[in-house]
Length: 95
Image (cartoon, rainbow, N blue to C red; front, side, top):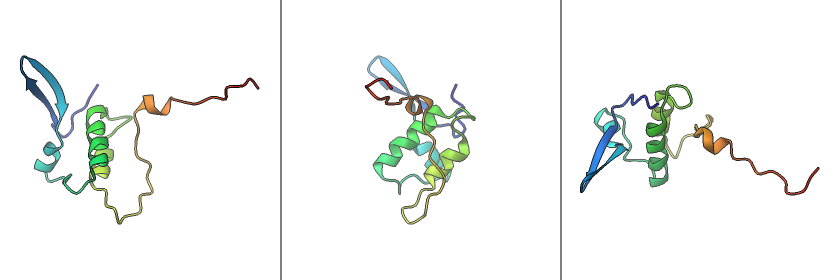
């Protein structure tokens, strides 16, 4: 269940279909700049907005990624969706 702390959830209508999206400009409108982020981090930020649930992904983690600076030393690990962390590669040969 998405928390939507930043009111970024929106609907995109294309023809007769509607799609649920999460808008980065919602953060910008609240004074949380995202314009400085590289494209790859903007994609990750949208993913955090989409999966924010207050437990696995919190609004503090969204703010931390939005505040990323190429000159800062990042010591905190970025959150990843549970599915990404459960993919493990096991050896092909039996032990």
